[in-house]
Image 1 (cartoon, rainbow, N blue to C red):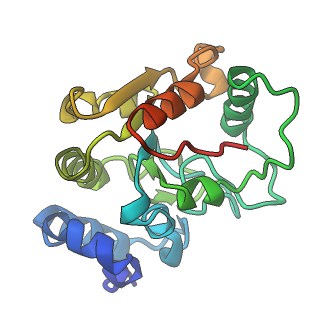
Image 2: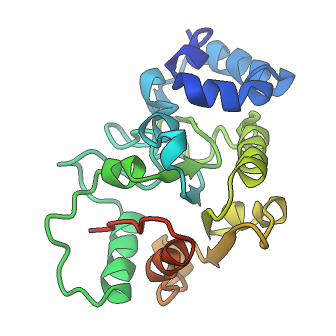
Length: 224
């Protein structure tokens, strides 16, 4: 049951997002999840993992993807991330390829497929939907999560300054009108999925992000 889902969210994020969490939209999400008999990913205790690992006081980068991985053992509540030891999905492989090209590195030095270290540095790895049904991609795209994520983006836009929003793919790009480009940096690119046929490559988002953070007296992200 998901009636206690909010209790799995860090208290500081609960306070910041209280209007969204107390909304009818969020109540409808809980109602839907409770009505399901199919397997749902990620596990309940990891649904808010992106928030829990990225402390509010550290927040400076927001990466938005589509929805969680729908295969067993992959989804861990962080966009694009999979646990260490799990086969690296194609989108993440492309992210690492772009990262290596962007920072002129020939090798990912012990770069784990688990992106928790990015989150702990202040990278909020959000999916547009925070849950998905097993083996059914985008199955929870229309249950209310998009409204919740829109609310999160609006709050971050208003409450924070000089954040970097990395919007990959059309789902993420649709969020750009919610962000003030005078207060934040908006970086947009194709989705890193192979279906985008390489359009993601050459975006140089990782270096552009760190240049912006340094220009605003913030610690850059150690991507490797």
